[in-house]
Image (tube, rainbow, N blue to C red; front, side, top):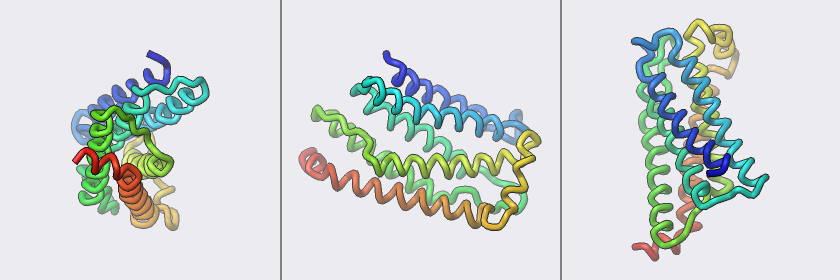
Amino acid sequence: MNLPNKLTLGRLVLTVIFVIVTADPHGWGAGWAYTAGMAIFGFASITDYLDGYLARKYKLITAFGKLMDPLADKILLCAAFVLLTETTPTGDHAVMLPGWVTVSVLAREFLVTGLRLVASAQGFVLAADSLGKHKTVWQITTASYFLILLASQESAMAWIRPFFSLPGCGPHYLGNFLIFMTLATTLFSGLRYFWNNRELVLKGM
């Protein structure tokens, strides 16, 4: 197994650790869960860039990587969005991620994954397109923003708390903007993905 594929599998392992760490932020993880989760999520997101970069640079692109790299991204990001939706923030942060936004993101990812499975059954491997990569960047940015917001309520990241009080930087402004951009790119990229592969969809019906 080459290095990019190892990084992809490593991202799956980091996702499991991320979920475990942030699962009980007010219990055994009180005071550090979100800070640790933010760090793990950030490191896992970096591996998303590294595995693709190394695969292209050293010509290590494989069918496994084309399939598993975007799948590992989806698992990481879906886990983050679900955890952020379940979070009950404190202070004046009344909303993290609305449930309907998370459902929309999950629906898109499941449908695209289903299309990839249909393609795989017919002997094709559908790689992520450029718009899908932009969608991933917006999703990572949005999840990172809210994880940092939550981590700022813990002592280790308290120094960054004033940032969210700056004009336009709070969740009601910057947070909602990021949610909007994530939702727009997620839905539009999903529709374009199905349109570009409509012949495969019709063939499999």
